[in-house]
Image 1 (cartoon, one colour):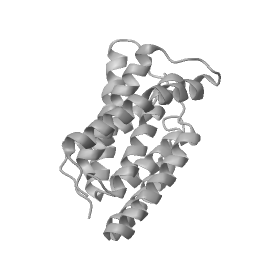
Image 2 (cartoon, helix red, strand yellow; image 1 turned 60 degrees about the vertical axis):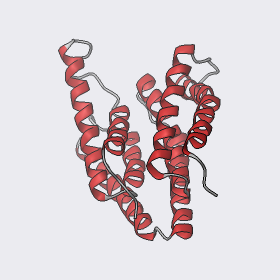
Image 3 (cartoon, rainbow, N blue to C red; image 1 turned 135 degrees about the vertical axis):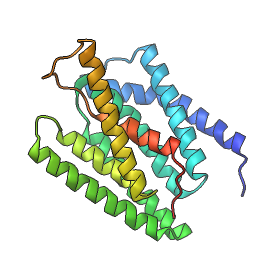
Image 4 (cartoon, rainbow, N blue to C red; image 1 turned 180 degrees about the vertical axis):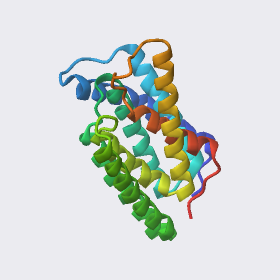
Length: 219
């Protein structure tokens, strides 16, 4: 059955309004390890980000099983970004379930729509991104946390669904965003050369940018 785009986007916005405050509470609890309540500003920002990411997921893939992977990854990205900014940590309790849901959704998509090539590429890209990030972590443990390694594995899975070029562009944009933010903070003397800067948000921004700006399609 065909679903009109305005109706589908309306459902997406409603989902964001309902889930945004809950995700804000989850992020605060993961960061503070208590029952602290999120501020109204945090709820508003996270809800708006979730709405944009969910709408982008629907626009990108339409109504198909793979869209569930993108939607779940969007919710995970909002929480991971918030927690990493607050306490420089990317919780496994968010990353692992997101990876599992993405694999399951991509598998269902392959079974239903025959997108086996995209599934194989996504799994290979996720493994490759994780392996390369692990090597970087071993060589430069001070600049790259293991949470970042696992996040790159997740991003490799999602971006790899759309193509190897999309993955490489997304990682490049993430690294570039991180470098620009670091230079900006250094220039304004908000951080020093030895200050630890969370790298999860720039990686997430890079992934969103490549999907938003590029013309991608799964096969």
